[in-house]
Image 1 (cartoon, rainbow, N blue to C red):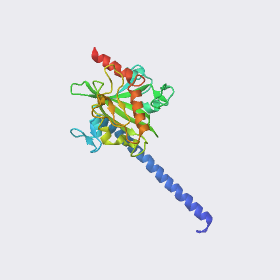
Image 2 (tube, one colour):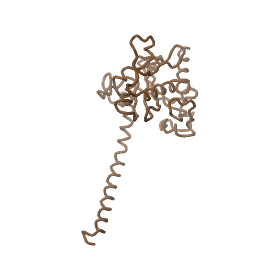
Image 3 (tube, one colour):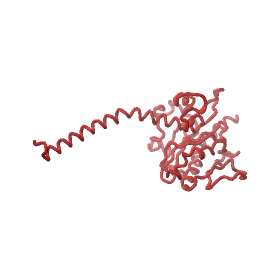
Image 4 (cartoon, rainbow, N blue to C red):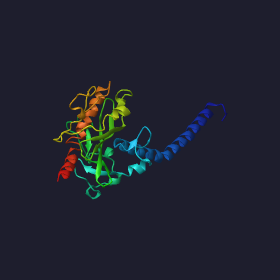
Length: 268
């Protein structure tokens, strides 16, 4: 076969493509464990950020020193049945709790259900999910961190909201996944906006969800300012989406049964 023949060019091109494919595939496979580990660390950082235990700007703990894994060791994931609000042990379910993925479960007909009155735009909801607990020096829970999700303008926003042990006072909120418009709905990642959440009150004395993300800004003379969060400028639909997901996940169809049981246990 002549070197400058069409056949030779095709053979060399195919050979080069094959070699490159093998190299790219090998690199992708070899990096997969690292990618999975980085995703896990990012997930943990977001939980810690919602809890006020990790400073994303400095990528460091907010107090003391330590790696993400060392700080996250203070957090205990606990599986909860969203229907009953009860904690669930491994012996009560027919899957391995350590391998359980609520995201996959939300798409599994055997582990999920269609959502009625779907204000969060999630379509189906997993039966079981994790609540993340932080314990204080007295070994009592000092903070609950709840996973939340809901549709904004372009995407499903996934994040966490942390609430003090009084199950009233919000400690923080973060989103770890969304595709909202940068500079508009994407401002959910703005540290200045996230700084408006700590100290706000999620429920009234009757246990109703009262926290709401309003259109516009909360005024200083508003007597109900403790229940309100500034809306995102120029992102009305994303703002409404966040408000809806809070109403859903903190309400009776989300973590409401769990929150009510914890409150009742504390009153005894």
